[in-house]
Length: 408
Image (cartoon, rainbow, N blue to C red):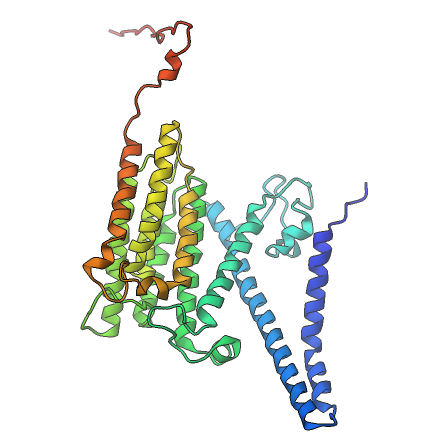
């Protein structure tokens, strides 16, 4: 039987061919435009301006595609990490293979996102479906890299508290001129999401977070901050210390506060018995958020997440069920990304923890945290007897008791 044509695959392939063709032919096009002599100087200026606009457009298109591709490749590796590490398997010993027929996946079929599209979501050998989670994770990681690129890197840090830290803008002014202060900060935050998203996915699978990933994240978080001071735009307070000591104190205070918030959530939350994660996802994610972003960020993010988590847990307990593990971990990942993109806005609010710390800055986050904790505590309490089973007119038989055998 003839194989059904995949139009999406054809469209993506045609777009790639066109993009590569224009990229290769661009120097020839620019040379022809510059070499042709216009009749008037005004026409020459207009032609050069249009050429500069086209150059910027091509530079942006190539740059966005490159950053998305890097994020997608990392997301492809994170898919392997999420599946193998919690189950005690190595991520480097065996190549990727089909989960059904165990056939090794070809190199071209293993290209992030495009490989899945090319196969139509099915294994080339056995034609059984491959989960759409793989391209979704790769696309999500690529989009995270692009969103941080737009909000933070290309603006020179315009999203940060206190404003931009470099004068350059765009690919030409930041990336190609290698403005290292903002490039390092972008890489620091992008690496942070390389742990945050997998931890949320591991929690979604109800698996335990590997300790090795936590250790590596802590080493990178503390080590990078000590090697390159300035990775924390907001210090923990008015510290009259050296830049490296300020970074160390800020990271330590953020980690401790995030861990305490996470342990409180773990203590009060109601968990399903088959949850192998044992509720360690939120403490891990909150503590690492405090490490990478500071205590002001983790307190604000927790204040946004915990009331929603508590309300969902409360209503779920009323129905005799549990909140799906991993949902709020994924929601926390999205909220954290939004917080970084508008970091300067959050820090300027006098009623939120920010640059100028005061008692007024806790007047909103503390009630929200207490509300979330109260809802989680109420949801954990055992509910009363279900009276609906007694509304039926049929008699309810008592529970059967098995005979007990005593062995002398």
